[in-house]
Image (cartoon, rainbow, N blue to C red; front, top):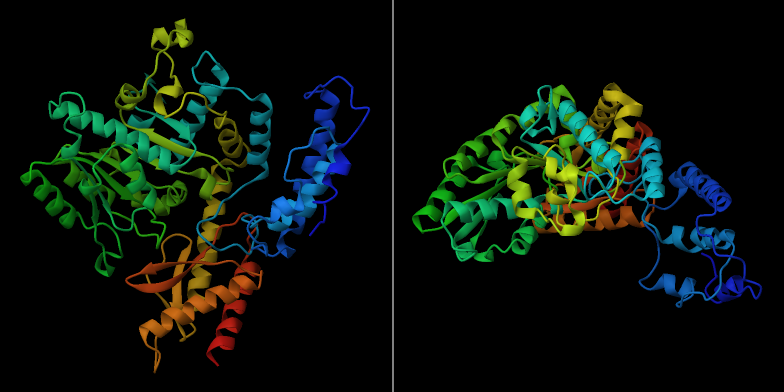
Length: 510
């Protein structure tokens, strides 16, 4: 690692630093970006040989670089040198083909180019008039993706007959998608209950399986729901850890009997822990009995549903109120890009609309345009639609489907490896491209012993720098998650990871 900390100031002091300051000088833009693009290309060329996890300690970067900002300018080459010698060694390389933790954070040349151009244009498209092309592009990209997912036209901004009643918006994360739909559902429930203002909020109840992402429970608190009325419904192996509609009905009815108002149900397609799938149609049918909003979180697995063989996981989606999925996870579109679709866009905008005098304009007043500021928490917004459109326009449906199927095939291959070694077990049936596995308890090894052995296995694997795996707990068992999907991954990386797992297992068990 570099030792620029003590010398950083000497690089940045230029006594004759009196030239006119032109931060967007066209020649500087060209020169800086050429160097940045060269850096990116070299990064992807060499990333396979880098340790996936860094060996640094908290606070290391302040020791490497100056703890105070420089007074004077420095050549861009100095900045790039510090990036290479100090920042890169402290990175966890999510783009590494040896990264198998969490869920993938996919990327592509088209997405990077789109993000670069959007950043250069730096538009703030809060209203249609503020940047017509930015809004139009987002609407178009979302409608294209809706067609790939075969969503009902009720979720589209534009249909063959004109402007639809539904619509979409690109947000930063699933957390935002949950928050804005929770707020809309909250307001709708308050209106139904005849509440004076927000006086009835303590009566509103929300529901999700215990496998639902923790961000849901956080968003519920932010939306003002009483934590005592946030229902986490237990799941088990009998439903492969998916939400049981019968249990959901029992809990919702019990709340009604207790004087509460069922308000919102979150169903997940591809849970973070084990990739469990909640039965969307059945959940929607139960929620309809209570007039509750249904949201589908398909952040990861939604991308797979562009392939016909996976679309059945969305059966019943025509009966839900909203669905979100994140192309930045598995559809080759860099962060941040979460696509939220709602069946009735007005229910969202009625809760989130702002209309200050300085934003009023004829286009908005005409009712013919979508002002995306009214479908999100903030007002300002990035030109996210460009990178998503560039990915679909450049690669086409067939290549995107090939990308998904290749990852699933590699995960199936890894699952077969695990099943062929009697030291291991696959803990839950594989869905999509995630395999949950562990060293199984056998002989004198108790389940508690197995948990500790698996923890040691994961730690030793990750220390090698040759692979990175994360864990979860399923059915009270400590489980390793092997998530295939990094954009650079090939079969040889999966095979190498399995060889490393076998070798490391032998070293700790023999």
